[in-house]
Image (tube, rainbow over all chains, first blue to last red; front, top):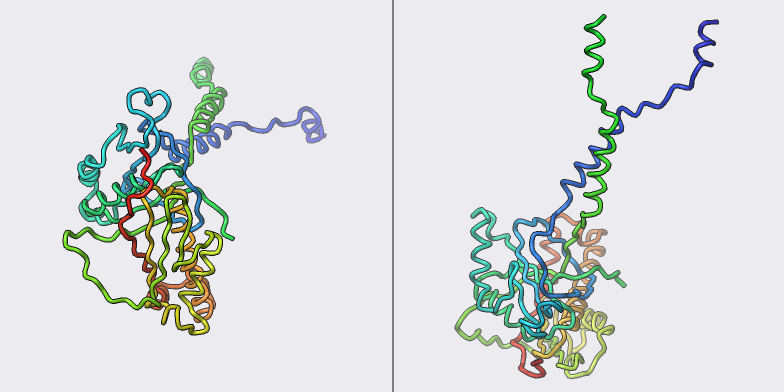
Length: 155
Length: 182
């Protein structure tokens, strides 16, 4: 009798005590995954698409060179010709060796052979500037290059 | 009695914890860009100041691809569309019928790529991509034939064998100065 009474009294509420834990778990996941963008992109670029892609594995071993036309607000000072951006500033081909050297110093000696350069280039830029960059990279001994591209389905 | 009530009051109300956590979660959800960085991997040749030694290559082993400033292709002297490039390159490298004017064997084939300074990067990448795709498919076919698996699922030794059989050699010439934009 007593048993029945208890049952009819109230529907036991679902315990929400573990809800914060679940949410925190999600939160930590996103905190770890998030990469807060550290540099401002001053050139606009739309990378071409390709199907034979390799994933860039370790962020700390990658340095990025951006090539594209300066964004609207910079066109007054820098013109509209395609420019190279190293780090967070507009640069020249001659600045590349120093840029690579600065990045190389942050990498432990053992892993220096694995350093890769990611070229993020606008699809409409002509090859002239890219050839110059390639030559500079070769002269600096940075031979591993990844032309950043969007995924295209294989036919 | 008094003591136990005191303890009850001291307990922090954790009910709002979920709300706070939600707030943070939504913030990170919005700011996150799961950046999948992918690209076409290329190994540049090392720089040397001396002119490269001229190797006498048989013309039949060289697959020359020229891309001009108008983004047109000239493959072994014939104009070609990009969509035909992959199949044509595969046929050249494999040379199933042993034709006189195609590669003697896959490991002797060499692809020579040359572009103008005015060539669009987009075109260059798609040409490079097609050539890489040709090699990937050839390697896949060879792996299937030998080991019954695709190239990427082979172990290191097997992969090495296939690479030895079908090495990817793309030689890039210095671009000619046509069509540079000002």
